[in-house]
Image (cartoon, rainbow over all chains, first blue to last red; front, side, top):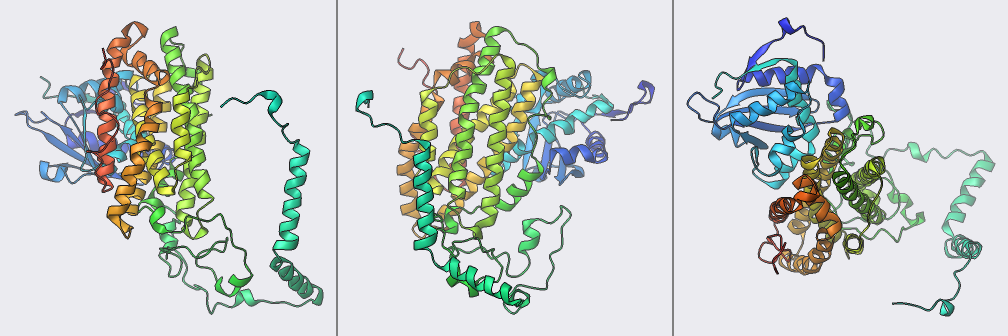
Length: 162
Length: 395
């Protein structure tokens, strides 16, 4: 990650497509690291269950192929279920995780990793149509963790913080 | 069974064993097998005559001329299997030697040896539709337990948490080599025409070696290995002794590794250091590949079996005992108690941790039954493992 002066750091809103697009760009510019981690082939929906102004869910789908994030888009609920799996959590949960990653300089606190938060089914819920596709979440867990860890490269604001 | 020492015959010396084995080898290649000597003689004569053969340049019966092209990932098995003559995986293997699938081999069959140990000859007993994907993924996602873990960042834990972590690692060290021995045992029984499966099993063996290595290192870096346990041993032996490849793969990859995957996920969750989190996260990725093979191999077995109802009933019968023997590992105090201490946050909070173990147990069994269902095998009514953790049930 290149050093960025504090006054030049980008600030991105969460939840928003731009936030996930920034993560995708960071992943794709850091290909050497992805090649170390190995292929990641899956479509993931990040759902913020109260992510809209009127507290309705918002879904952001990221498609990974080989070593890259090849597509990022906000999708509706019908499209979201077509993904291999979804990670669903409240805005407060996502915010705590993102802030922990930022505070740790790219490494979340022990109790803020994706697996920690999802293992018991709460506060992040893993949703998949079948066990083969839910196992993709485990097969690519390190890559997904590093995907969200990259959010430390910019500042995140939470306009809908309640 | 105990045997009085004075009644036992002495073990043969190593020298005697070597002599016996060597004599058997000599007899095999001098008396039992003759063809190799004829082939040798013929070829030596050709060399003495200075006579070229060049028969191998004849492409009449070869799948020659169409060149495989790499995809964006490089040259995968999928890419070469698209070329006519190379991707035809037989339903039943008929070649029991090392002659490569797709080569010109028929003219030489009568002079070639037969490997009698190749006994898993039905595609239905080993294939999985995701096998090539898993193999490529396994190669791409290898990691190094020596260098990829930040060992120098390992922090000392309070005594109870360190002992619990080291005991959990002792358990994982104990089970991982069995998880390597099982595919090794069967890989040797699988003919070369199922090269994709053999290749994947080789990666599974490497994965298990690395897991054994990383947990052994973690334990010894944290104080040491602690207790082995009979329950672990019986569970592992039941996997190695499974009567068929599919039955053993079910027990190891679908049930056993499914449970171990849950333990790795739990391990990541309850890890008290970033080093431990990274270890468990890396391992759970590998384990999930093995589970994925187990589910789709089993699905393929049932989907292609000529008498599905009979196959399912036989698997139920196998599971009735297999589940119970595997359960013997998962009720060992040497596993459950360190888990509870790590979940609770210390020995004084072991009771709270046991509540967490109960929650995980429910989740483990639920996932096991879902994986069975995904393979087309409804085990929910016959599962012999209690769906609820029976902690204190008799109290």
